[in-house]
Image (cartoon, rainbow, N blue to C red; front, side, top):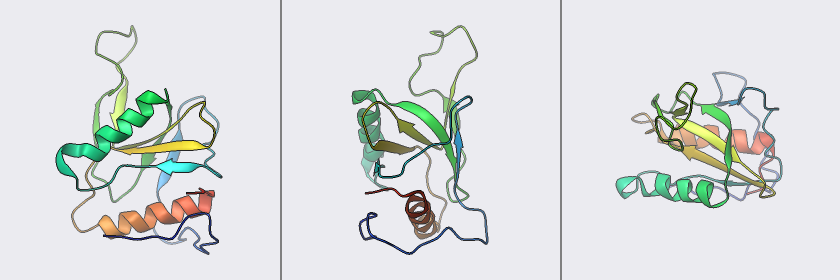
Length: 143
């Protein structure tokens, strides 16, 4: 169980210079992702039948959010699967992929959703939480 203070405070945390930090890669043709002042929604870890993931999908669907970036972390197990949002055969082009972690945004002001579909690697949950916290502080996430 982890408790972290609200992100709006001056947490004084800076992304670590050593080691590879979490990387957020915008979708092709999209500008860099801006999460400054945003509320960041993410699934809880370790729930029954991926309840956190399904709840996060409900937020993405309800607010018609679009994937703005793919998120990479050395602490998440790699995953690539058919798109969670498009049924096979409904598009004329190549099948879109869903990855281990993705950042969604839309027309709802100051709302970003980080969907995590992969498991955190064994023994790395605290490191993943720390990495996520450092990224959120460095990017100016409000809560």
